[in-house]
Length: 151
Image (cartoon, rainbow, N blue to C red; front, top):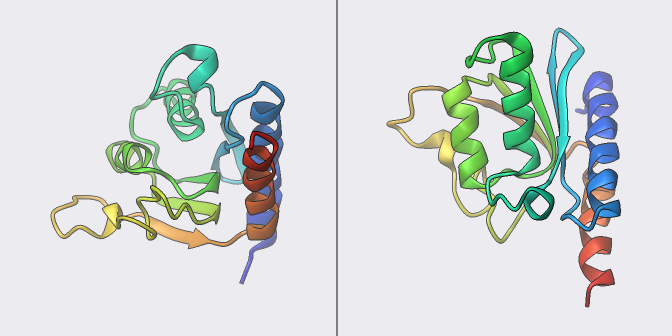
C-alpha cells in the first residue's frame, strides 16, 4: 500500500530527477524528509561535479546532516527514484537513516534487493525499513527515457 505522503515525496524526488536529466546527468533524484518536512533534496551530479560519489542520495545525506547539524539522521526517510547502489546503501547505514522509499529496482547494481541486500547482512549494525515501488512506473519511465534518448 502506498502512503499518501510517500507519493507526495516521491513526486518531489522525480522533480529532482528531471533537473538531473535537463543537465545531462543520469536522472535520479532524492529527498530527505523528517516529520513530513523536507530536510534536503538533490539530484545526480557525478558529471557536473566530476565526482563519482555525487549520487543524489549521497548529496541529500550530506546536505541533510549539515541542516540537522548531526551526522546521524534519526527519524528521517530518504526518498529515491531508483534502488540505491552499494555506496549509497552503506552511507544510509552510517547515517542511521531509519527508512528508505524507492521507486524502481536497479537490476544492474541495486544494493537493496536486486543485486545485493546490503541492509540484510547479519553483521550490519543498523536496520533500514524499506518500501519499494512507490510511483514505480513513473520512475522507470524517467530512467528508461533518458537512456533510450542516448542510443
